[in-house]
Amino acid sequence: MTTARAFITAAVFLWLGMVLAISFIEAPLKFRAPNVTLAIGLGIGRLVFRALNGVESLLAILVLAAVWADPPGVATTAALAVAIGALVLQLVFVRPRLTRRSDAVLAGHEGPRSRSHYAYVALEALKAIALLSGGVLVLDSAMR
Image (cartoon, rainbow, N blue to C red):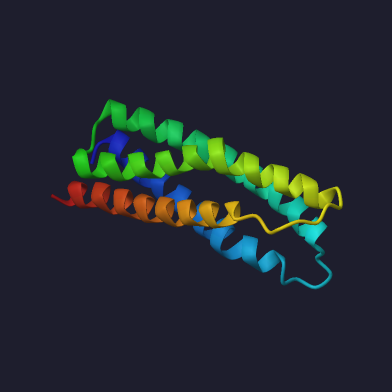
């Protein structure tokens, strides 16, 4: 396995672990904790997801550079492109809507629940599947 492929594997599984831990464990559980109000949960969520998305962006850039240095194959590249594309869609289209909604809630405005959360979760699931697929495909190619 080349250094670039080893890096892709490590970065992809690190990224996957972060997405699973934060999006699918921390985010839903924080609202079940005692005395956590909607405002506190939203405030924590905004900070945590801003940090997560920053690290994800860095990992995506580094994965892109490693793929450019040593292309791992069409299927692997496609899986990684899906993961990066899902991240871009989240950052450009979904997060701004979620931020506007959380700003309104934090300012005390009631209103209908945002459907943007469903889009974000769907993109998180797609991203997780793509990262798992890409990581497994890189490992599989190294075993041959």
